[in-house]
Image (cartoon, rainbow, N blue to C red; front, side, top):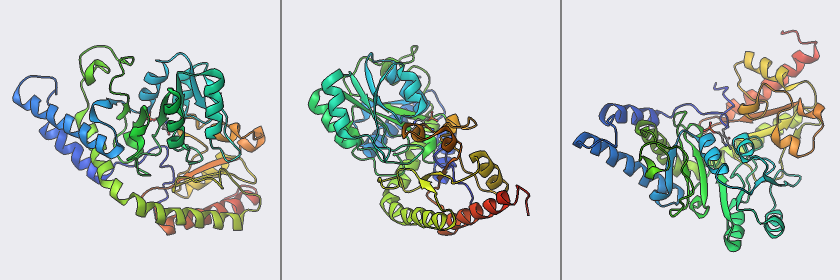
Length: 368
Ligand code: PMP
């Protein structure tokens, strides 16, 4: 049984990524900026990884800047614009970096309405609009493609933080966005590796100064082994995504059905919106989320109370807050996020474990 249900926080290293990392580290560990033959080979491999990633996300390779992950990409971008409009449910790495940004509201399903973007552009004319691809807490898919098209029509730049989209759903159209954020460890790559896609002609972003790497935009010796591992993981998983979406959505829905059968008044956030196949954000009918989390952890299940970046703090769900929940409800939020290899039995075992924990808590917290 695999009880790991926190894939939106991070994923285990994919075996093909591990192989790719080892191969790259052993064969092409040289500095891609050096001038001898071996370094030239490392540089060629790096550029080939950039091309391959570009193919997967529908963006020309010269638009891709490799970074240390989504947090860096989001910070670099948000700090480069004066007036930015961001959705109310963006990840903290967008919200905190954007400072005093304009806020795009979400509807009752936790989804940004394209109409709200049209109105925001008409009234405030931001320089950049940022709406994530899929929400990290609820899994709700945002209409980024439609919003990208609205922004294009209005001559406003558009960014999507696709950290949770890439590797779970097909990303071949993402290149339609002016800016895209991605993070390797969300889809089987290593921690500390990601990218920012920007318009080829953009000269505004110069986010780490120093050497001439990454077209002079992001200095520092490239982490080619991690980049190779990231691209290999995405190449391996992408052809399987439509089949995974079908089989895993059913497992997720069977889990929800089992939970609803056991818990009256269970609230599933964004239940009627299209969502990631792996994610369920729920407000439990009773008991604080940390009680659920610790007792499930004792039974070898790993879940989360919201986004990992703000977990540990009570009432930290950005999405449930944006939906206007009471502080009391916020304490009962739990997030489940399965993975590519999670089986139907794993999902049902988790539902069963929730029931067992409920029995234990209702007996006064004593384990059986
Ligand atoms: N954006 C989103 C939507 C995320 O889910 C995360 C990870 N929680 C990040 C950004 C930050 O990613 P990283 O760990 O690569 O900095």
